[in-house]
Image (cartoon, rainbow, N blue to C red; front, side):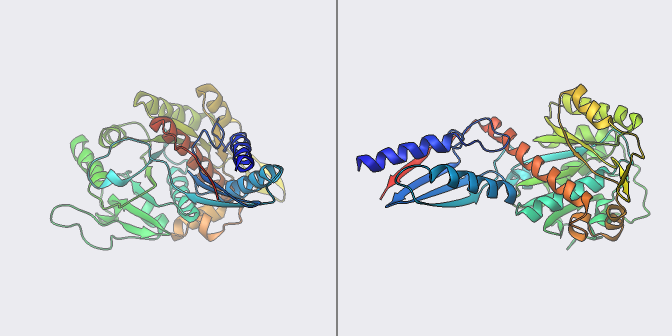
Length: 363
């Protein structure tokens, strides 16, 4: 018994020397190890991790196995990993009460591919295994329905205003584009905008979601303010082009987030470069996203190349992460989605300040 207890103590120490990506703490201190069971020379480690990420899981398994099999008395290690997305701890009302995290995707101006990025991030997160919703708050120019290939809701809103969202690629969707004719111009002022945003968030039957991605309209105005007043936002992402003019506008978007006390998870530089015959052509200049990130004290979390497949996917309603998953743009978008999931988990853990105790069991 004493020998087994000693082995389990060594296991605990060893596991706590392994850090989970983006977290500045060991697996034990983070509460990610739920149980370690020793039976003979076989050790079973059960874990609960905060993100769906196959590469992270694979690296973690390898690191744990290599570390623990060096302990005398352990010849075999079985690692059981389940996923549970962290909740940011913020209280939400209405149908959005079951939403764990809300992530806003914004830009300071139009034409930078913000909606394209939001759509592909949402789909990539859903493909990883997460429960994802996507709300299009660009009332004046809703593009999400076309980009997702869904032009109407599955049923009309109920008499009390409750809405069943559309769904595509495993993502639940809501947009003003589902409620008006394509040619209809939205000539709305502040109060009408506020009511619409409130309904999109609180009256849509989202169900349980790990992430609700909010595609915000360009600029800084009534919709952004209404959104901040309607639901607590876990964090934001700024989309920019490399050129100075776009970066100037993106800087305003950053300041908007800061004034609304919304953490910025990172900057995404879209249309960073065009590659032809192995040669990289910087159509919109270079370095803008990195310079802004350094100036504002945040990270540049991705640089998406120009790719006709991205545009074709948006026009056809078949996002590039689904349609051409092996393309450079799709791989970069998937990398950004994984980084975003990890940063959301870190922010949620910091918000909750929670720690799950480990249980050691000897059989």
